[in-house]
Figure 1: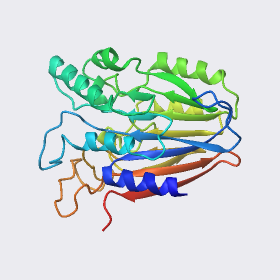
Figure 2: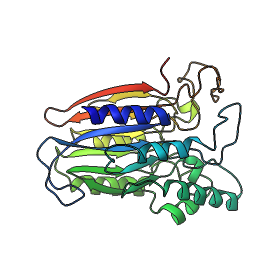
Figure 3: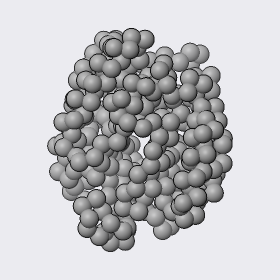
Figure 4: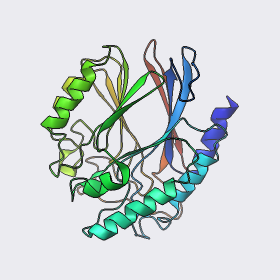
Length: 298
């Protein structure tokens, strides 16, 4: 287990990120056949908000993303891929600045040593222009990919200003699921939660119930998302939803305060509310063990 210890230590130094371990079969990225229950892992980073400037919220706003990239590169065993689950950049009404921030973000993460990096838009990236700039830099707003027997579905619930997936994308999802075996392993990556966590705080997807209904036909579904800037776990029937912490700032628990607001930086507890998670999954029977780690030990 020494490799797991090294990953934990390095990610704690970086302060952000999520390492996800998934049992795999069939053919790996290198073309070699993996044995049943052999694991692979990927790193999930979320809500980097490149371009944000607020010393009272995060005086290291220009450094956290770069530190995370360096930490991933320093892992003894490189992840199979890295995924960013939205809000890559801080929102702006200026279309030029929006593209400048995306270019800067892209240049920073291009230093990752992994072969594959997957991206997803957040509302900060896509809601003002329905994803036009995002698509110029990072490609499709929704898509699928497969890795070692696991089917990944990237959903867009941010480019619609009304926070909806939309009927066209919903039909695309249903058509994709029809190609899957009923018991196939599915990981859904999305930005906003698909359930009504706190609609008054924009922590919901307008037609999330329709998405969940489509996914409920499959027994092996896990949803990983961002947006809420904190650890959160939720079940809709047999579907587990896990929120990732942010790279930029923390937010309070839903309903814990009268108004949603960024958590101020605490010099006595730097990076409080930012952290990483390891999830180890086994397929038969389906079982998830989740362990959370603080950025700094007290």
